[in-house]
Length: 433
Image (cartoon, rainbow, N blue to C red; front, side, top):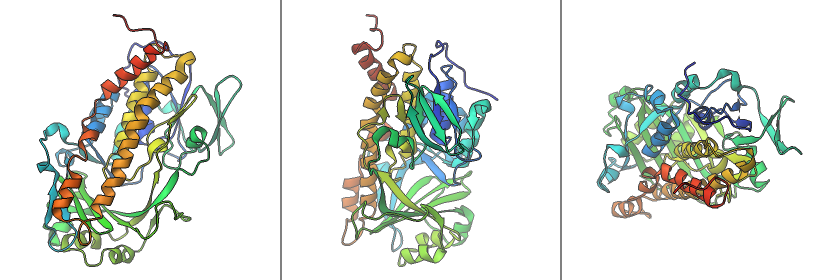
C-alpha cells in the first residue's frame, strides 16, 4: 500500500469515523491521513464500488484533489482524450444540431479552466491504494449516530454492531442517514421531476452511424424543450458517456414521490419515445443505448447547516444537487479539502472541535448551496430552448458566466478565513504579528 506523505502534525486526541466509502469518503480518508489522522471508514456495500458511469471534474475539483494528495493517482488513470475542455458546447437537439452557444467564446479562458472526464470505477481504483485497508469496514450500513454521556458518538449498523467515535463525518450520499442527525427529520430531499437515462456507447459505433457532432474532446449539450442530452468521451476517448434528461414540468417540484427504485433498467422504447422528433445525432446516440438505466434525480432543498455538534456532512449528504453543471462531486471534494485542513490544523483538538466544525460550516454551506442553486437554474435554461422558449441569443445571455464562480474559487483563501475566524473567537491561538 502506498500512501501520501504525511505532515508532521501532532497526534490528535479524538477518533474519527467516516460513514460512506464513495468518492468523497475515500478522498477524505486520504486527506486526513496526510495529517497523521487515521479515520475508520464504514461502507454499506460489500466492497468499494461506484455505478459504472462517467463523471466530469472541473478545474476547482482538480485543485482540491491536488491539495488532498490524490490528483497524481487520478490523472494516471486519465489519458489525453479524457483531459477535456469542460467549457460546454451547446447545440440544438432538433434539426441538424445547429450551434446554439459555445462557452469557449463567452470569456477569456486558459488551460487552467479545463478539466477531465473519468469513469467512476476508475477513480475509485486510483484512490483505493492510498487508503489503509485495515481501517476499512464493509457491509456496514449506518442506521443512527447517538451521542453518549462522554460526548462521543455511538454509531449503530444494521448488522447489530456499533462503533464509537468523537467526530463523525457523513459521506453517505444523497440518502444520508447522518443528515437526520444534523437537521432532523425535515423533508429536505425531493424528486426534481427529472429523470436521466444513462448509457455508454463506443464512439466508433456512432461515427459509423453517421454522427456529425464532434464528441472527441468537448462536452456537448443538446438542448430542447423539457429535455437535454449531455455527451462526453471517457475511456481513452473510445466511449461516449451519454446522459439524456427529461423533465415533467406539469407538476411542482417536490409534489411527486418516487416509490420505486431510484435507479432501474428500462426498455429502450421508453427512452426513444421521450425524444421522438429530435435530430439525427441525438437519435443515433439514443438508438445505440440498448440497455439504458433510468435515474430519478433527487436534490436537497438548501440546508441551513452541514454540522451539528461533532457531526459534519460532506458531498451529497449535505448538498445533493442536480447534475446540470457537473459540479456536485467537485463541491464534495471542496468540502473534504476544507474539512481536512481544519481538522488537521495543529491547534485543533477535542476541546475545540465543535468550533472548528462551525468554521467549516460557515465557509462551505453558503458556497455549496450557491452551486446547488446554479445547477438547478442551468437545467431550467437547457430545457427552455426552442419555441415557445428561448432563441439562441437568449441562451447566450442566460448561460454566460455560469461556471466562472465555481471554477475560479480560491480554496486556500477559504481555509485562511476559517482559521482567522477561529483565532478571533479564541478557539485557536492568536496569530503572531
